[in-house]
Length: 72
Image (cartoon, rainbow, N blue to C red; front, top):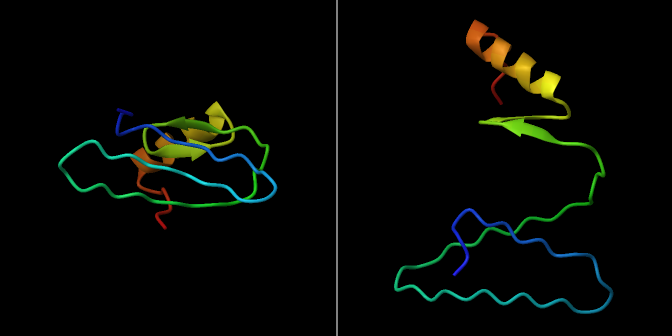
């Protein structure tokens, strides 16, 4: 069985695409699908913060600790 933290990727193809998800547990399973165009940009993350570089992450931590981090 796949760990709960596993992410699956569908690659762009022509024609039909099928995705089969098996749940070998007695518990209900929830699935979230999302789609978008690949951006081909670098991504850095640590904890709850996501940015393009490690410097972006450091700035996010500093702003959060200073109380000036913008929450959306």
